[in-house]
Length: 192
Image 1 (cartoon, rainbow, N blue to C red):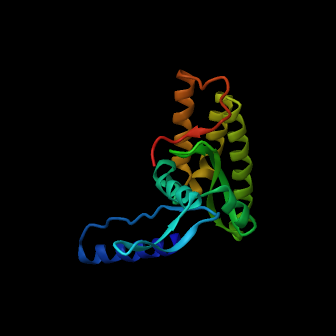
Image 2 (cartoon, rainbow, N blue to C red):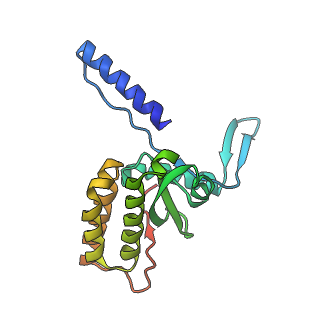
């Protein structure tokens, strides 16, 4: 879907240039999660609707809502990541609790298909991201910032500059007001 949106934006940009009109880029955030749910026609005689319900669906919706926060086009839950890890280049994004839930979830983003996963650039970024998250969860703020600076070029290539900025902001905030002693690295999202 993201590939088709990119092609559509290219076509629309060309059309706008030809017509001399303003081009406004379309952006689509996608949240994916895997798990049990109920799908089908639900309701009563007064209101009948085809829908999908369940905790898995709720989490997918919350992940979609966070694509803007993280600056990523796709965010997936841990079960989905487990199911597709051999087909796509994935990067762990965060360890979160979504609004209204107490159980934390590791979330990921998809950077590309198998060809990307086989690249040296991805391997380098993957290792740096794991190291950065380890230092972040250990409260080693100086190390986090050093790793972020070391990974900027590679991360920008994959469109992760917004994610790096988010972690820089968190580190600045935690330096001023450290997390509690029992903090386990989970970030509680305040918005849907």
